[in-house]
Length: 401
Image (cartoon, rainbow, N blue to C red; front, side, top):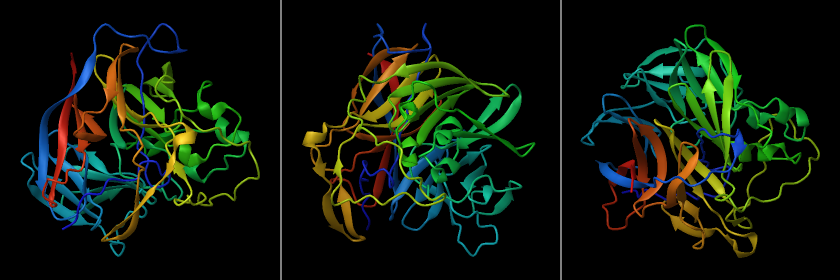
């Protein structure tokens, strides 16, 4: 039997949740004042699945079915609301319709298909793994980018047109030692299934940390975003701002940048630009044995109706108290865990551009995954008392206190 292992959350290459968000205010850029109504995360229900493997919740469709991935077997599963697995399949490299390197977690598409964003394009399969169709051309160069985390592919209706939105991966191969890299940066792909056309959206705003003239490793610039109607909120891994946009057919119009500097306190000073990296070269490896962990990090964001936003983040630690990762031995070999002094993740709530609650995550919750119908779905903190083949996720709602 295999236990669900808690990931080493501060290794930037292996794990990267993260993202933030904002609403509206009188100023385009600024901090958030406190709202009179305080909101908190309250557990409403849960999903529990008995399964021998390492499964991660990815998405939920309008029929109440759940999409999961078994990272042990590289299998994809569909479960019903009772936690019963009703479909599962594996896409192998010898399949003539193999999509190539998968960049992000797949997602449900139009309720009855599963979409994969990969090096060969967008691929669509049914729940039994039968290939349906794909986009005409690859959308990105091949990059080592896959990560489990929050929902990463969204359907959006903008001014009567249907689109798919997902993270742009080409920037990971760019040369971040040049100013052109930051000037031309675009975080999101907007794909029109009808025209097969892709447009880049969301550059770096003036107040962005990445506009400081320093060198920023592209993997520190990865983002998470969420959409609600034609509204988009995005946060970057090491940038203490939430950027809130309105989507149009032509562009993404910035409504507001909301500061999170009161929460993201310990961002490391970056180096001056130096010798350019070879284009397409992988990032330098992280030396887990000598890297002290504890830099602040934005994890994820949920954008809800009525200008309500939830952001998950880790406040981090001052450099002088950071420690090395702990080495552990498991059935898969040597692994690593966060040092004991890493604080638990926190969350902050914004309502109408004002702070309206937050604090340390409830003790049962580990990581935000996606929002649907006003409910937030979280993975659970590993529980040694739970059977090894049982995995649990929580259905959570932001409620006024």
